[in-house]
Length: 321
Image (cartoon, one colour):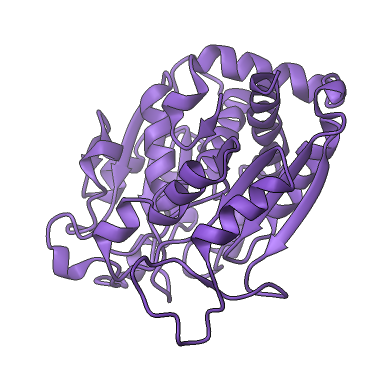
């Protein structure tokens, strides 16, 4: 595996899940694979779980790790082609990327959407430059449109906590005070479509995700109907994807607080488990009583980030042989 961006990159889901459980039972089993190999983690944006879980996974696999925070201690990088670099950006990504490739065997990239130019974001302009010019295997640590390590961890968590063979999983939009990317819901939808679950997406009208991510999911605009009988509730805000109205891309076009997941919402479910990728804005996305309840599995979900990343890095290391 040379790139990891979408669910298709991981291959058969059942095999990936089996590998995840194997690694969870023995996190150091494949430590020999990373001996004298180096992972470089590039952060254009802030991170907590991604930074810690990816570094821990790489260390479990015996790798050296270099972490570069582009916004703290590095030259400011220009990402656009054909510009006159007479501003505050001293180095172009097209020189920086191959230099980075000289110092490592594998690269993880985290770069969020700008939320102003949909075409630029959905082309994954920054990530694709790393894939093209680094000469190294590249995996996404969240990009403008996807967060596959999170979605893989979500699937592992659902597999561990499900009580029926084919659970009902609901992705629900919730209000937020800031415009957020669609990366997490996009990837969650993509991975749930690949899994053996009854998958439903619910959100206010106008917040439709890109059809390539919605896939075969059922879209239900009535949140109560969507929640009925659900085994898992995955709450997440996303800004307007601009599918129905391109001018709305990246904007907050709803702040409807009735979508906040509270005890009443969870009472509509089948004793459903509450999930969120974290960090979460309490009182906006979810109420205290729900996220602190026994049915909240946000911490085990976060812990599984180490496992999902271990599977991905292991497979990339195997491709270096």
